[in-house]
Length: 98
Image (tube, rainbow, N blue to C red):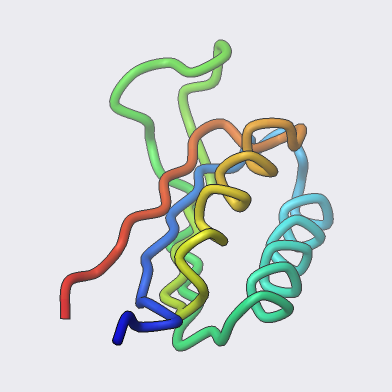
């Protein structure tokens, strides 16, 4: 019988030009989005870090990492939403092998 949920990691890099309030608002938006579609095990704000290469003329980004369980279709939707959200420089959702 196939599993109805799987465990995932999702890391995103936010534009630091959003400021503290803008970053906090996006983290809250994603926390709510993920918890509405699954269950969050962990949210880690890694903070501002230097990027390995410039992205959209930015040299720094604010990193946020989530670990959650959700239905297998949700990570694709999470990636789609991240791709059209202003202020998200990079993102990646991957399944964790258990």
